Length: 281
Image (cartoon, rainbow, N blue to C red; front, top):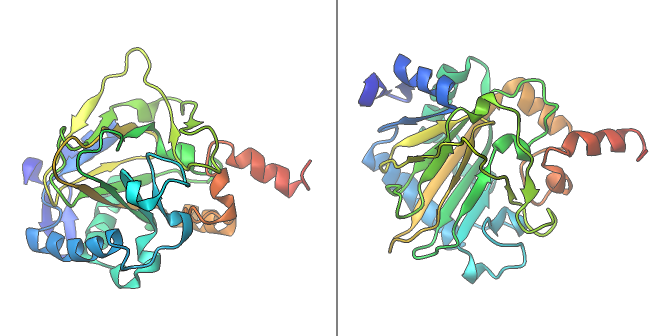
């Protein structure tokens, strides 16, 4: 593996150079986290989600490039939230175990899986774009510990042509930027976006099947449309501290698009929650 990082049974050893990249840039590419056979096993069930053989109710199966009213057959960027909730057989799979080991090496002990997500771009969909954003814009900002390791697994080789991840290194060290709903209303579409500013330097992150990128909650990232003849499928597992996950759940924050507080998953969550706690004042 590049830079000395490598699989180690159910774990994965992150090299010092890769830990330094994560701290400096806000993200890192780790090669060969899963073997070809391990990706094959995950891919079989992944396809069952896309074929709707595994039921995912309501808005937890949606299109991140369109609004909630868009017909399923027209989805360009399929988003499946919380697949392990709807397919419990995935809980504790080899990817989760290796990603957990990586999260604790990058962020310290006491990390716990917060949510999982599938993101699949249909072939030849120029509009399968994930706009520029910072994950913390979606989450409560009053949580006691914002350490995060979001692991993004390539089920297909992820390239510039099919819409690989792209980052603005170093933005995790800046103030959180102002975000807006992509379609003007969080009740109509979950997606939040922000803008590039002068001085931002964009870096593409093409990776191979079985590789991952890991990023933190503040680094700006997104991805372009899929101009290829094949799918671009990704499997995300995000880790935060055990205390933070417990805080989120105690406040009704689950990352499901079906939950009432899903529309409050933004920078305004803290203000909205405070207003509720004060009887709407």
